[in-house]
Length: 95
Image 1 (cartoon, helix red, strand yellow):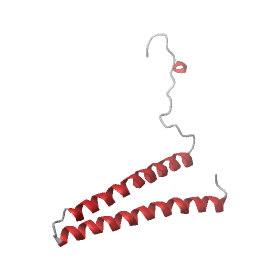
Image 2 (cartoon, rainbow, N blue to C red; image 1 turned 180 degrees about the vertical axis):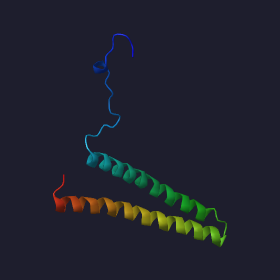
Image 3 (cartoon, rainbow, N blue to C red; image 1 turned 120 degrees about the vertical axis):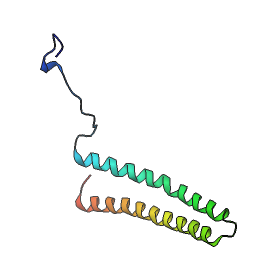
């Protein structure tokens, strides 16, 4: 210890800015939601580019189509999950 400092003088601040676990979980869920919401259109564009640059190769067309389909399914799941959480909170009366 540095001379002149006592244990009472040393304070360690929490690096987590949330007061409780539900706020922390809500923040993580929102982060995942926004990342997924940003990635889905990007993946749709990548799938479209793959189809356009396929040059008639059926494997690349199929891969591009699958990327677009899975991106749309993922986007729907993300949106439905957020809606289901809101419905469950409303039914339980949680703010």
